[in-house]
Amino acid sequence: MTTHQDPALSVIDQAVAKAVAASEIWGESTETVRGALLRGLAEALEKNGAELVAIADRESGLGEGRLNGEVARTAFQLRGFADEFESDVPYRRVDDAAVAGAPPVGHPRLTRVKRPLGPVAMFSASNFPFAFSVLGGDTASALAAGCPVVVKAHSGHPDLSRAVYELARRVVAEQQLPEGVLTLVEGASRGAGGYLVQHPGIAAVAFTGSYQGGTALWRLANERPRPIPFFGELGSINPLIALPGALEKDSEALAKTLAGSITLGCGQFCTSPGVVVLLEHSASERFVEQLAAAIRQIKTHRMLTPSMRNGFDDAAVTVARHAQLVFQPEADGDGPAPRLFSVVAEDFIANAHLREEMFGPAALIVKANSVQQISEVLAAIGGTLTTTLWGVDEASDSNRELVRAAEAVSGRVLFAGVPTGVAVCAAQQHGGPWPSSTAPQTTSVGYAAIERFLRPVALQDAPSWWMKDALFNA
Ligand code: NAP
Image (tube, rainbow, N blue to C red; front, side):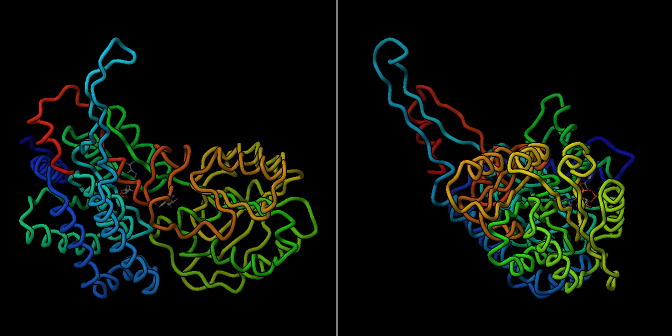
């Protein structure tokens, strides 16, 4: 084994070697074995929930209520992926019986099956210490697909990562599975993170975090002698368009709902609505006042890490240079003061700085003079996890234009409610065009996430013994 100057690299070598060794046995495991592990992990999380939530709260400051909800969601999705695997949906094979005659009509027998990619390097997110961390959605979907997982712990919650991993390690051992099914790499430097992505034993990467970190690692994945799939969920500004028709009905309630979404978790949600697009109208002006009044009532808590707080302050300073500050109350306790900025659509479209994510309790109001200009605002954003449209209930040409423009840039389009809160179900799509994700044809939330880690293989005229062997998952 190579000796490295950085001890973290040797730890990565060992973890990846274990994952590679576990790959075949886990990839060929039956639905009973895979389901038992995912359910065992869910149970272990729930049993130790109180103790884990206390650690998570100390490290993240997110509060017990939110963290208890996250434990429940994480256990729910582990079980959900077990159900999904057992239902055979991801493995559904396609059989084409041989057809006699000349091509294109005639062809040999072909069977399309799906195979696990192999060991997945999973970079935990900072803002969901359970649901997007050691046993979060990326791990659950990769394990369900039959891929061992090497977790890169997030530096924002190291004790929690270790505690959750210890539980998971015990469950893996109790079920007499190879240790390499799930391994943890802690305290890795930036260089070590890159080393993991470029390790020859790694077959795919799942990442949730910043645009800068994600693109740096995505480049490294693509610069390998044999590039590998990189499923990155990066920054997103989640425009919310509120048309006067919607605001004239009950703007005060809508303002309260939006204020809650902008400040939820101190604005540290990938789906936080960072841009609010309004048409020039008296209802829009009243709505801005109501939004400011509603935000004023909300107390923010401390941000996840000091560097995130610095990042938010810097991003807000940048926006303040190019837009007008509408509202900023006194800072309250440990949390940063929430704030609202405003700019006209022409400036928003012309200035890329205004389209960068402010990860924290802030939003930018963009004032447009027409539906056409709203579409141009969306086109300038280019890629976002979500777009919310309030007030397009009736069929009309202008509403059609807006929905088309929203679909063109978003993974999820909402016609009611707010984008924070991402349901875990089969129809979910969490991943939009670049820069919100590096693989917009896939999702990192919901059961379709399992597909990311499966590779189709067409078996042509395969002998019957292999057809029998090869259906170990059926
Ligand atoms: P991050 O800085 O991108 O870090 C995510 C993970 O990638 C961490 O494990 C980090 O290692 C690693 N990493 C980052 N840059 C790397 C590089 N150049 N080479 C190798 N590894 C690298 O994200 P974060 O710490 O969660 O948050 C920082 C900022 O990201 C936030 O302020 C916010 O702007 C944004 N963010 C966005 C979302 C979203 O969903 N859109 C979610 C979270 C954060 P370390 O643990 O060692 O730092």
